[in-house]
Length: 210
Image (cartoon, rainbow, N blue to C red; front, side):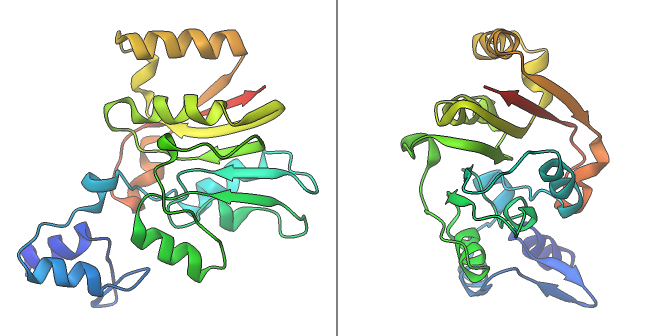
């Protein structure tokens, strides 16, 4: 049972009331497991969903306005999107690499692009929000590519690993210099905030007003 439980949790299931609940069709994951594959969406896609409470707090501090073009380029299952103000006509660009997450997003009424954000250009946006993958400085690469999509006068609010704050790798040193030049601010997010998503890692929230 322990091995089965671990396999289902790694595949994205959540244990609730003596059963495992998947946010989308579980059949593709079950088929892979039955064929002897090892399925771990956290390792494959670095997917750690943003808890709704945290997403709500971050979105609340952003100044949205009628007709704003909003980019969510690592949309996951829509944690940030679900908290956007419903009384405004926002123009959304939704990108998500994980096909199963795109199914969830589609079921919520969004129109996700199942693409690799780093390999594409989606034009300028007024507001960019996100929680990109962290591994091997992917968050830094995503942030810099996000910035290329930010209009002058626009705002970015992005969750990242704290690795860049102290690492001596060139990409991290240059990123610190970039943030300093742009007058960006950042705040620590306590380790326990992502516990429900399967990790206790500390994170940081970077806000950049262009």
